[in-house]
Amino acid sequence: MDRRQAKTREAIFSAFTALLSEKNYSKISVQDIIDAANVGRTTFYAHFETKDYLLKDLCEELFGHIINTAMGLPHEHYHCNYGSKSDSVFLHLLRHLQKNDRNILELLSSQNNEIFLRYFKSNLKELIITEYADKGLFRNSKLPEDYLVNHISSSFVETVEWWISRKMKESPEEITQYFLAATEPIL
Amino acid sequence: MDRRQAKTREAIFSAFTALLSEKNYSKISVQDIIDAANVGRTTFYAHFETKDYLLKDLCEELFGHIINTAMGLPHEHYHCNYGSKSDSVFLHLLRHLQKNDRNILELLSSQNNEIFLRYFKSNLKELIITEYADKGLFRNSKLPEDYLVNHISSSFVETVEWWISRKMKESPEEITQYFLAATEPIL
DNA sequence: ACCGTAAAGAACACCTTGTTCATTATCAAA
DNA sequence: TTTGATAATGAACAAGGTGTTCTTTACGGT
Image 1 (tube, protein in one colour):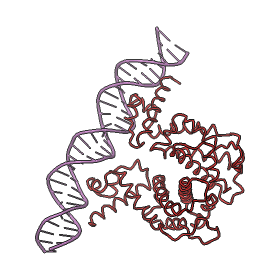
Image 2 (cartoon, protein in one colour):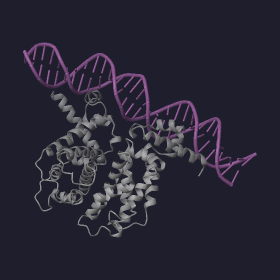
Image 3 (cartoon, chains in turn yellow, cyan, green, purple):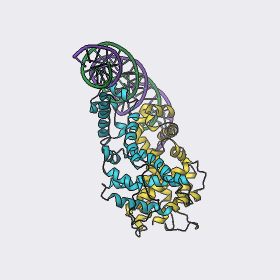
Image 4 (cartoon, chains in turn orange, blue, brown, yellow):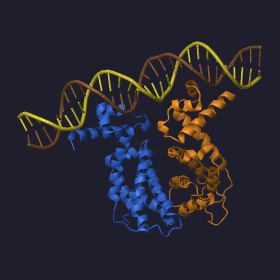
């Protein structure tokens, strides 16, 4: 890929991320973005169809990466003991978040957090389907499988949101315990 | 209140609701709204500062009403048996939703559902704090109180979302069972 | 050194926003 | 039913955003 393209794309992502962490998505204009990124109007539209597509591309880059590292990870059965050293997928995700790759925490704690939590949840749902549901780990529950998938994804994302909103005082291990305590008994 | 004002306000709300159920909030212009409501531009701005305030007013009317009917409702302890005829706050809310007051279901199942689910969750959180947390019903849990409040609110809203997205095939009683099965064990 | 291509910059038509003002219609109370 | 108040209308406006087109300039890869 042409270095010029890569540089422009990076500049736009970076400027956009900065803007997203300080003002509402709907109030950000393409003008704001190209001013901050210091690129021409034409250049922006050569890279992205609209502001919405820019957002989509950014999210795919952010969450695609995080979720992929958790895919196919060796993990124990969802039914693990609280005290065990379970290296669950969830713990892995929390640790990954803690690293704050590409300023993802800025975005997840900004006033635009809902946008990103939605993408996060949607990717997580996929992950849980392939890592748990498809392997039949939810079979012995009385609740419908898709209700369970939805409940677990939502609960995890909401746990992450709670954790971040409280400045991530707790360790990833503690948060995993909270989450497992809240969701494990239902299975 | 002047009948003219009431009529205009109602026309705008109604047109806005119709538009919300068919297109994305961000793509709806004030122009669209006043055309649909058949009111003058000046009139719109005499009633609402901006499109965002119109949304806020609509939500307050929608959820304020539903939540109020659940406030101070006689309810059993959160720990109820599955088989009991628990007339929980949650069952009450589901039944109320089923009535589809003011086309709330159209909004909750539209592409703009996130907006309304957010308002719903925020109001529900208040309700759970005053109806459960403040009465000390969460004291004997190892999890932090605000984590619990958040978890329960989110789980209920997400259950409602799941229910609606599947065309509400199940009865309110069944859904209450799902929800209680998913959240009760943690307390 | 060269060709291909990306970026810049200006100009554009079009739409949306929120406001102002003069005019008309409607309401509520006497 | 008259009257004073107030709500709604319609036209016009500046300001700003959008997405596109075109020409010129600068840079990258071979």
